[in-house]
Amino acid sequence: MPTQDKNQPDQKLSKKAKKQRQQAQWSPGLRMLVSAFLLFHCVALFVAPLASPQPSSGLSRSVESMIEPYLRATFLKDHGYRFFAPNPPMASHLVRYELLDAQGNITSEGRFPDLDQHWPRLLYHRHFMISESMFGITDIPSEPYSDSPEDIKYHQELRRLPDAYLESIGSHLSRQHDAPRVKLYMVEHFILSPEESLKGDSPVAEKLFGERFLGEYVREEGPANDRR
Amino acid sequence: MIVVDYFKDLYHATVDGWNRFWFTPTDPATLGLIRILAGTMVFYTHLVWSIDLQGFFGEQGRLSPTFVNLIHQGKDSAWSYLHLVDHSPGLLWAAHIIALVILLMFTVGLFTRTTGVLAFIICISYVNRVPGSLFGLDQINTLLITYLMLGGAGKAYSLDRWIARRQGKKVLEIDKNINANISIRLIQIHMCIMYLFAGLGKLQGDTWWDGTATWMGFANTEYRSFDVTWLAAYPLVINLMTQVSLAWEIGYAALVWPRWTRPIMIAMAVPLHLGIAVCMGMITFGLAMIFGNVAFVSPGLVRGVVDGVIRKLGLIEGANPGSTKTEQAAA
Image (cartoon, rainbow over all chains, first blue to last red):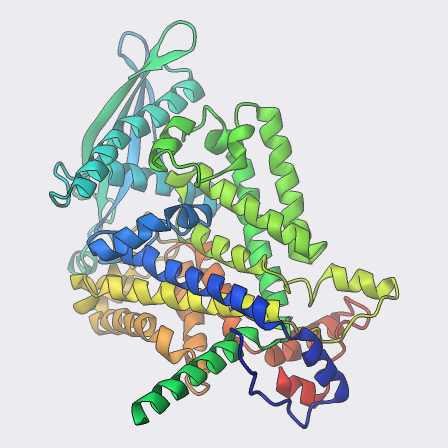
C-alpha cells in the first residue's frame, strides 16, 4: 500500500545490510498492486473452506461461485480441510470386483486397495482414496440439500457421477484383465470399539464387514464400444 | 474529533502493519530449506505415479477423461496439460519424465525461477487429472509449490547460487528480498487457515467431544501401519491425545504468531504429525505438514542449523558462510 514507511533503518545494521534493505524496497505503486492481489488471495483462501463442504451459507457460496475459476485454477476448490472431521470414519471402504466371462461365470476376483499388491504406501493410499471416493460418490443422498434451485441443480449433477465412476473403473478393470464383464461391490469394514479390542476380538472378523452391489460393467463386443 | 482521530490512527496503523507484514525483505534461508524439503516430497509423490502411470493418467485408465470432466463440472479452469498427452503412452511417459526432471531441478535449486513456475504447472496438472485418488498430501504439496513459485526460493541453498559463485559473479551472502517474505507469509497464513478449518470442522463431531476420535484412527486396519490398539486399556490417554490435538489445531492460528507460544506450537506439530505418519500409515502427509510448519522457523535458526550441517559435510564451498550478528538480528 502506498504510504510512508515509518520503519527507520536500525542504527545497528551494517552499511551493507542498510544498502541491501534500500535496494529491496518496492515502489508504492507495485506495493499497491501486490496488496490488492494478496487481499484477493487471502479472501479466496477463507471463502473456499467456508463454502465447501456443506452446510455452508448462501453468502460464502455466492462469493465462491464468483471466484470459482481462480479457485479451480489454483487447486483451492472443494477442499474444506476437514481432515477426519466431523468424525474419523467408523468404517473403511474397499472395492471388491468379480471378473466374469461372457456367460456370466466368475473367472477371478480382486479388491482394492490391497496392501500386498500396492506398494509403496503412497500408491496404496491412492487406491484407497479411489475406493473411498467411490463410496462417497455412490452414497449421494437421494434428495438435494435444500429446495434452492442452486442446490437442486448441484444435486442433479452429482447424481450423474456414480454411473460415470462405475463405467470408468469397470472399463479399466475389464481392459486390464481382459474380462468381458466386471461386477463391482462396495465393502464396508467397520472398526472395533476399544471394549471389543480389549476382549481380544479380531479386527478382521467377518461380523465387521458389510457389502453392497454397486453395478456391473459389460464390455460391448466389437469395435471399441463399451457400455454398462 | 476523537472519533476522526481514532479512524485516522487506525488507518495508519493498519497500513503500516500491512506493509511491515508483507513488504519487509527477509532472509530466504527458511524458504530455501522449504524448497528442498517440499521439492523432495513433490518429486517423490510424482515418482510414485510412475509405478502405474497408464493406470492413473492414461486415457483408458481408472479415471477416464469423461469422468474427470464430470467431476470438474466441465470447467476449463480445472486445467491439466496431461489431457493433451494421455491418449498416447509414449507421449505420456515423455511428459512424465520431463516433469520429474523439472521437479528435481527445482528441488536442488537449478534455474529456480523458471523451474518453480513449471513445478506449479506440473503439480496442478497432475492433481486436476486424477481427482478421485487425491488426499491431504496433494493439498499441502500444491500449497507449498504455489508459494515457492513466487520467487526467492532459489536465493538460498541452491545450485543457482553455487554456480553463480563458481562463475565469479557477485553473490550476496544473505540476499534479503520481499518475494521471499511474501512466500513465507502466504505459507504461514495458509497453514493457519488449514488448521483452523480442520479444528472447527471437528467441533461438529461427537467423537472429538467424547475424546474417542484418535481411537478411530488407531483401530482402522486399512490406515494403520503400526498397531497401537493396546491403548484401548488406557482410555484416558486416548481422551488426552484426542483433545490435545483438537485444542492444538483450533489454537494454532492464534498461538503460532506470538513469540512466546510459537516454539511450543511448532514443537507440538512434530509429534502430532509424526503420530499420524507412523500410526496411520500416512508418512508422506505427516512429513509434508511438518515441512509446511517450517515456514514459522526463523531464518537465523535455519542458517544456524543448515549452514552448520553444510560446512560439516563440506558439501558446498563457502556456502553462505554465516552472517554478521547484526544481519542475523535483522533477519
